[in-house]
Structures are given as C-alpha cells and as structure tokens.
Length: 225
Image 1 (tube, rainbow, N blue to C red):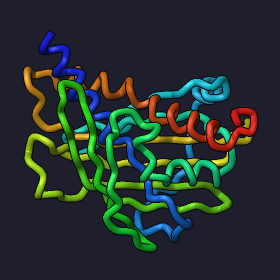
Image 2 (cartoon, rainbow, N blue to C red; image 1 turned 90 degrees about the vertical axis):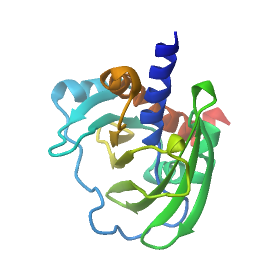
Image 3 (spheres, rainbow, N blue to C red; image 1 turned 180 degrees about the vertical axis):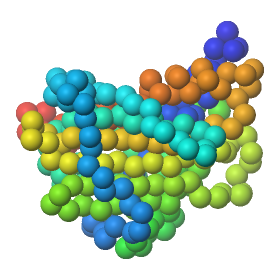
Image 4 (spheres, helix red, strand yellow; image 1 turned 180 degrees about the horizontal axis):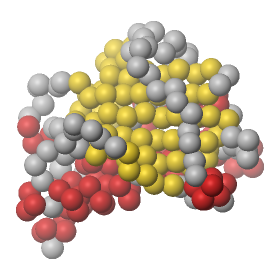
C-alpha cells in the first residue's frame, strides 16, 4: 500500500510539473527559441483527434536523463479563447488538479516569472519557479516554459527539472489542433520505481488538454451559460 501511494505521489509530481503556461496579458513578440513548428499527424492520429480523442506520443531526448511526452487534441473556440485560458495563470488553481496556488513574481514584454505550489497525496507539497513566454498571432498560439532555480525552498519540496510548451493551430477539420509537450527529469525515485512513475505520469497528460478544453467551453460556449 505504501509503495502504491509513493508511486501516485511521484506520478502526480511529474504530471503537474508540466501543467504550466504563460501569464494572462497582451500577446508579446516571441523570444528566441520559442516553439513555432507545425503539428504533424499520421493518418491514424488525425482520425483519432477528429473523433475527440487525445493522442499520446514519446519524443526523443538525446543526451538527457529525463523523458519528453506529447499530447495532441482539439480545443474548441478561437485562438483568442485558447490564449485567454492557457495564459490565465493566476486562475490555474480553479481548473487544474492539485495546483493549490500561483504567484506571478515578474512580468515583462519578453518573459515572466511564476512560482507554483502543488498539493499532492499524503499531504506533500511541491514548489517550483518557471520562466515562460507566449506568442499569439493569426497563424496560431505558442507558449514555452522552463524551470529556473529557486534555492530558498527545501529539497523535499523541489522538482528536479521540467520544460515544455503548447502549440495551437487552426485545424481545417474544425477547432484548434493543439500539441502539449513537456520534458521531465524526476531525479531519484525511491524503491526503484522511476519507470513506473514515468508511465503513470505519461497516462496523466491528457488531463491537461481535457481541463483546458472544458475551461474554454465553460467560459466561451454560449450553450453553457
């Protein structure tokens, strides 16, 4: 039982370290390195997302200890709607599971700094600090983030590393084709359960797109008012 709970804790930590976007505000020019690639789908993956399903993929990680996962699905609404929800970082605790608090520490035209507190099973708390950027244009929405040092927090509350991004593009089949990807390195996981924790974290990723999809519907679908 204790082992199962430990697995759940670490899986939640991995998943939630990726549940990040950018601070609400006016779209800004993209800094160097921001994701802008189009989203490639196989015919089978395309059929799945058109049906409303979410596709999961592993991405290569040359020279890194962690793993990168990607979830692809379709969001409703307009690019502006997606921007509003994905970048409304202060309200993430209202609709993203386990995120208990966010604190926007710095906002500038190029990058912003956000501190996040997670509430996990067994009363555990994890905290991390992100540097992120967002770009909205007629072609689509791009968001990237990376973890930056936060030396003041105790080791037990730290997440080893995470980075990632959102790519949102108008979809000819309707809606917004959306790729959500993140890299995570959990470091040491007790009892040799790193692989299992990674597998559980991967299966949790669709909840990020699902939560965002539902939030857009709640805020912007007139039928839900």
